Length: 200
Image 1 (tube, helix red, strand yellow):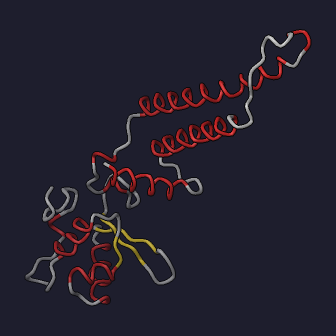
Image 2 (image 1 turned 90 degrees about the vertical axis):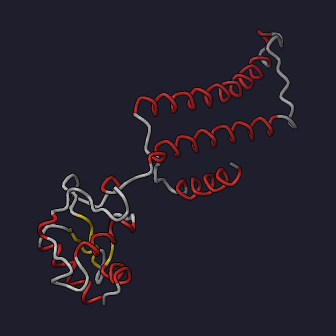
Image 3 (image 1 turned 120 degrees about the vertical axis):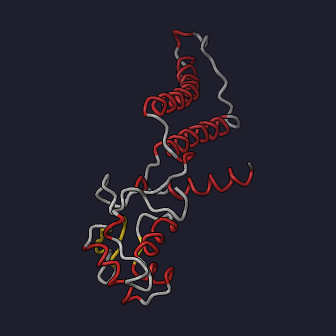
């Protein structure tokens, strides 16, 4: 589908053409396709078609009445409109063309990658724990110092920092995979992608 084409699910026979109105319905609907957004307001459509806000509101409501568009209140004085896609009940991104590179990977691959990241973190975290356990055993009389491990106070903070970095890296990679909305992660992902794109 090119930018000038309308989605196949739109009923062409209910649209008004240039012979009956100054701005045809097809031109209004192209606003939704070309904007590449899940929904638009009457003001956005008015700006894109050079109609007044009131004229855009009437035309959009007319398309809603004919089943071409759907609408909903998005605030006390704001109403949003979107294409009436038969496969969805809300203006989700699947209603519009999406970038294939941003599609999520299959669930089995996602689980496998998260498992690898978890194993990676557990391995390094386990080494850190084992060092402390061996140091504790070396202080027992029964072991006679055979498990003695040097926990250099100058080195251990570096190990702790390395472990924290590994855990953070794992959490970031997991967040990139599942796109979680937990506090802070959307911003961290944006910064990471910005740096990654500039370095790439």
